Length: 393
Ligand SMILES: *Cc1c(COP(=O)(O)O)cnc(C)c1O
Image (cartoon, rainbow, N blue to C red; front, side, top):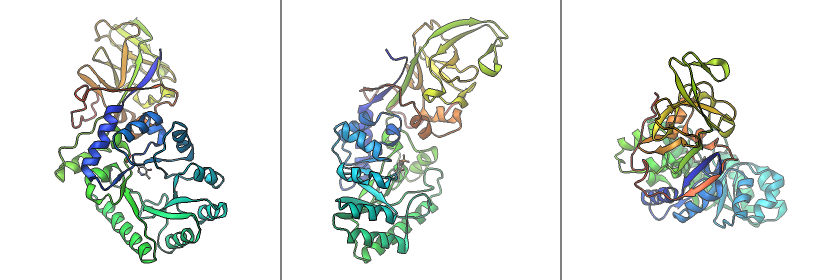
C-alpha cells in the first residue's frame, strides 16, 4: 500500500480530447503533449487515454520521453518539440519520431546519417525561445529539401502571451507573423502541409485558427490555462466548454497527536497554537512536490473537511490541523489535490498558495509517486463545475 499516490481519471482525459475534437472539428490533428510525465499524470497512462479519446499524435519534449512511449507500446506519431542532441538523432530516426528543427547543425547531421525523418521548422514569431525566421528559415528549409530522406512536414510556432492576459494583441501579431513566414516558405516551393501554432489557450479561444494541428497541453488534463483564458472564452461566447480535471493526489494520516495551547509546530516554530489542537502528520512533503510555499497557507481534505497546514512543509512530512475533523483516524485518506466529499482542492488553489501556476503544481508531482488509473463517472467530484476560484482560508 502506497503512503502517497496519484489517481488519474482516464475517462476524464479521453473526454477532454473529445471536447477539443468538437471544438476544432474533424479536420484538425489533435496532438496532446505528454511532456513532464504528462503534466504529472503519468506518461503511459495519459498517452493511452488520449489516444483512446481520439488524439492523433502525441507531443513530447525529449527523446527520452519518446523512447519511453515506444517502449510502452505506443506506435502513434510522436512529435518531439524540445531539443534532440546531435548524437541522439540516429536513434530518433530509428524510433520514427517527428522532430522540431531550428538549426542547420541538426539538418546537416541528419543528412549525413542518410536517414528518413519528418521535420517541423520552428518559426520565430516573438517568443524568442526556439525558432528562426526570414532568410534563416528558408535556408534551413532548402537544406531539408536538398537532403534525400528528409521531409519538411510542418511549420510551427508558440505563443508568448495568450494565457496570461485577456488582451490578445501580441498573440494576433504572432499569428500574422507565422502566416507571413509560412507564405514565404510556400512561395519558395515548400509545401509545409502541417502548420501548428495552437496551445491549449489558443485552441480554446480560436479553434478555427488551429491550422492543421493543435498541440494541446494543460487543458487536455482538464485544467484551464488561466483565469484570463476562461474570462476571454466567456467574452467570445464560449461558455459551454467543460474540462474535466483528472488528477487526485492522496496520502494517509501517519500520526495523530494532541498538542497544548502555545505549542510551536514544525521547523522555525512558525505556527503557535492558540488553543489545544489535534494535529495529523502526513507522510508527504516538498520532495514529493508539495510546495514549501504552502506552509501555513493551504489546507488538505480529511473526511470531507478542510484541515489547514500548520507550520512549515518538511521534506517528507506535513502537519495539518484536524481539530475540526471529527473522528479523524490513523491512515485516514487525506486529499492534497482534488475532490473529497463535498469539498475540493483545485490545482489553481494549490498554485495560488504556492505562488505559482497549476502547470507547475502538477508537473512537479514526484516521479516516484505511483500513478493509479481510475475511471470516475462524469458526475462524481466537481468535473461539471466550470471553474472554482482559488480560495484561501
Ligand atoms: C507545453 C507546450 C505546449 C502546450 O502548452 P499548454 O499551454 O499546456 O497547452 C504546446 N507547444 C509547445 C511547444 C509546448 O512546449
